[in-house]
Length: 357
Image 1 (tube, helix red, strand yellow):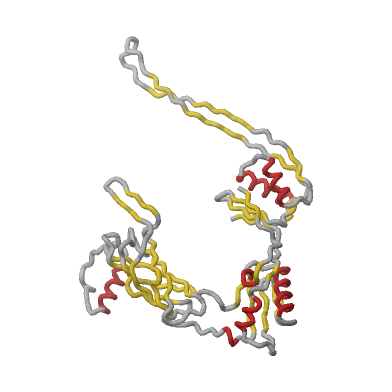
Image 2 (cartoon, helix red, strand yellow; image 1 turned 90 degrees about the horizontal axis):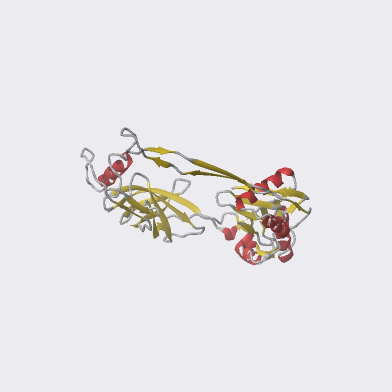
């Protein structure tokens, strides 16, 4: 399957090409317990961290069972994750994901107990709690079991509440950086020129292919947020390097519009070997042998077929459409197209980078 990448000369907004420094999500993580499971939780004897968590939780509630023998399967240790958007304030609700940490079979029907969520600085930024919604399920019988989806993963919509805000006042900034999502020298220069032509000279400066420094003019009537609002809708034509992206697992090939091919001859052929097993049963004839045995006689047929590989010439400096038409004219499969593209690159005739995933 060959996919043609859209033309690079389509104008895009600056807000779709670059991110503002400091305006990003923050990842949170926490460790908690899910209770109320219908016998699908952790086996306490196999997961000591679940037992210790249960004992510690009950001790905080005034119940001392540290010396008692525990054998329950309706509780599971889980990891809770969430993304806190930029400029989240106290009381903001967040969606959270809950994933089993031990040997629990399913989290369906469980309830997450109060779980603090920590940031990278080990500070608590949110607290999570609620009923876990699981899309997958698992059914087990005496002879077999059926599992659909992942029953050990679940979500809680609006299951966390932000308790601590990140101190970041963008309006007081005198300078910020724009980070290009696809670093490129030409694109960075075009963005800088568009900003300077709209606001004034020396406002935007290209620092490197992926970074543009934006300085608010002293005589600008507004703060940094106003400046970003005025420039984020400016349209710029992004540029890109010639690249061929190959996903060998799925057989998908994506070719950029700027890919060029020098004059090259291509031949493609395939060898097919067919092995057929047709065992036969040989039985003794009763009138001739009383001591004979029934045996299976193996019989194997092997056929070899090789497709003829026609040599085709691809003219130099062809564009993307000509390259795709030439590959399709060979009548090859996506897997063979991947091999052909890699061979053309190895010969030095493909003027592009190949990225294999």
